[in-house]
Length: 249
Image: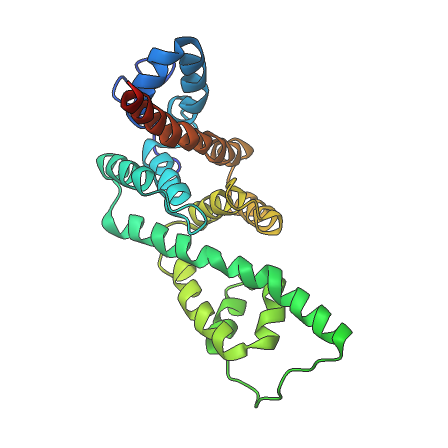
């Protein structure tokens, strides 16, 4: 998918019918500040015109950024789903994006569980002793070479629940819907997104993406897509400002 040839572009900012991450408010923004709107549009639609990633994969990354549990942008999710479908994405590919977007929340435990163990030890508090749990899903993830040592603290605290989570997470790596390289590129987008900025995960997935054959240019394009997502501030704010100005008239 990443290696598909992108469609030919008709201008420096992409095809005539493509506005990248923008909603219809781009027209209003252009009316108010034509110079800045044109400059910003050129920068933010660059990934669509650069030819490094396929249109299909660009739209899937954009779905991921908008649907992530740290973002939940309904308008952007719908717009990029439509664009992804037009570019040839399947229902199962987009559904897998939603699964990955949901599992991003595990970083609450990656952050909090080590702190809980440290502070509990400092306070002299010990967990209630439980019988050793069987964790087949965790064992499966280890066997795939996908185990992350950042998961050890919450495995120690609650092995049963951790195994339940890993059973859900293992589907991402065993489904074959995306190649290993594509999974890692999508994971970079989730972790590097400005609504998340999870440095340990970003580094881990960049390392894995390079190992899986991703180029530096492909990874940089994913990071650029994270940045251009920032125009959601204009998509939201310009529409509201236009409405409020009309009401004041």
